Length: 423
Image (cartoon, rainbow, N blue to C red; front, side):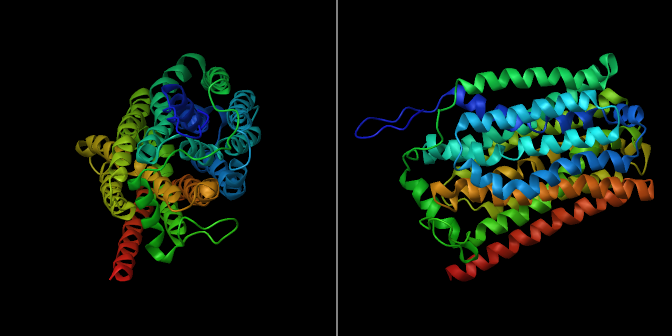
């Protein structure tokens, strides 16, 4: 994977590097996804409220949000193996602490560790893609590696409810830490020794895409260097990430509990709702990334479509508990959640790395990651608090719907401003 000089052709990135990228994105959220899939068991075992359960995920994402910009800069400087040790080691440690937690307070500590371990995943993997993948293939690779998050959610929704019922939720989480350490060993011997190097060759199409996007909202060109002000388009993507992230994680964390309590599904079937969403999320991230890879693709047009589709899914969540005959609508809602909301991070991340030069990919990814994790933090906190206060999921789903619609409005605003500048 080391870039070559002179007339020699660059070696194409291979399947082993893709596995590292996917697993890097997957291991961080495993603890959150596993606890969500086993929510009734965790709540009963620890004797906690729904709001306290939501705080678990909120703590993880809050830690990730407040450290995202700083760690994004570190991702531009540290070696790949060092980053893998931090991310995979942090995830495994968080799982072991949670499995051994005697009470709720220690479990909160585990969630802090989880947030610290996963926050570098986007900047680190984005930089590896920028350095070692040709520009014409970067969006597709980004979509595939982002699907790692949904891969972990898919596995969690199917496997952890069964393991939790048979072995207990603590042993289930402890077993997952062993798999994480195995992936760390694979990654250690796969990634390039250093992050540094010359970026992979950029095609004419890739250069055109890189030049075009920063113009939106008056951003600077990708040739800016050093500590220059981040392009406005990056902050716009961060705002969209926050809005979509709120609804995304509110759904991820509480969908199984919603299906179990409000719709009467058993624990395993309720866990399957997030697996359905995750399965669609894996496919949709790859497909949306390919659309983003096309010449002239506009990330905010794609975000508009995604936000509206996600809004329809949230509306279905609202109506599902009204009558027993409407309970089936949770499945199309899960499909829309996976097809639209879960793929939004591909568009915002792809847009962010296009908008800056190679040496600032980590920093720009950190800004968007901060917005994404701010939404991730707020979503479970709001949903859990409203559920605790009202005894119903309805108000929470209403807030999710509003956030998706607000993202649609933001996308329309950016497109309108871009057209005026172009005119």
